[in-house]
Length: 436
Image 1 (cartoon, rainbow, N blue to C red):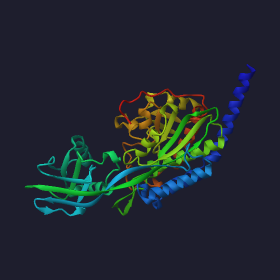
Image 2: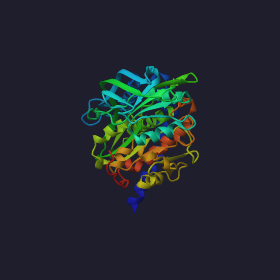
Image 3: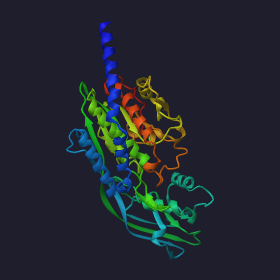
Image 4: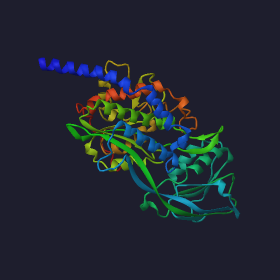
């Protein structure tokens, strides 16, 4: 009985000390500094394969160094570098009814081949997008069908066309550099193909580096058990100007989540009471296919990972009100229940994902490890169904509620304590066959 009372007193004292420490460690000024820097115009929207993302990675590296994180086992620095291949056009020739289309009015999507050639007989024909219908719904329908198609785009969709053109080709693995089964050639401001068309494209294959930024706080008695805190630091770069602004700053998506990850690293390093090993990682290339998280996950034994806290878009109140956030895949493990138990007596609450129809659980960087059975969940506050700044140039610092970000970071810090200390272990998620 005496031992029990003594233990409870120690826990109570530790809890009070922790509450005092957290307000000194995770301050508004510190979080402001992180978000403002990552979402500044100076970072050029942090698009993969640009100087902007390299600058963002260097900033995160410097924060990790100041905090005192160690590199991943076997690494000499914080960057976890891997490579993909990208196709860069050498020549583009598209003719419609014998007339050559200006290259500025051509956008190529989905091609993985060094050379691409098709016409009305060797491809899958042509289609004109209906200007009276939504662009994305028509685009998604075409994606389901696949094939090699010439797609005529009305000038009404010029902004979407420019966005497709600016994005360029997605990176691919060397093994995927084969003859394309699917390729969409978008042509702007053409109404019809009266007789024939022809597409001829030649590409240069360029080997491109990508890099996650990762550091660890080694565990004590349970060092082989891993707890991951993550956010993706890439965004969508520079696009066609909209009301004079062309930089996709990505303040909420996901400078907010990346800043939370860094602030949590600072907090747990100061506490220095983690029995399990903690990994903090900023993922690259989430916006173009989740390549960073996929590569990172392949370097780990998923059975060693106890839990993953992926943090994405916490810059505004959730639909549940202030001091709330939701957890994707809430029902798939008891991860959320553990977090809520640790917040008992506070004003903050976690809720199940209210947007299940959008399949958010498998749309963020938690997906690869979740598919392998890890209780890997994403924490967010974004009202994605009505968020007018999502994937827009208006996603800037001035649109954020920093107090909401602060309360969410502190809630994650407090709620994760029993997992970090090795007291609680979330139940595993059912593996998703074939998902890698």
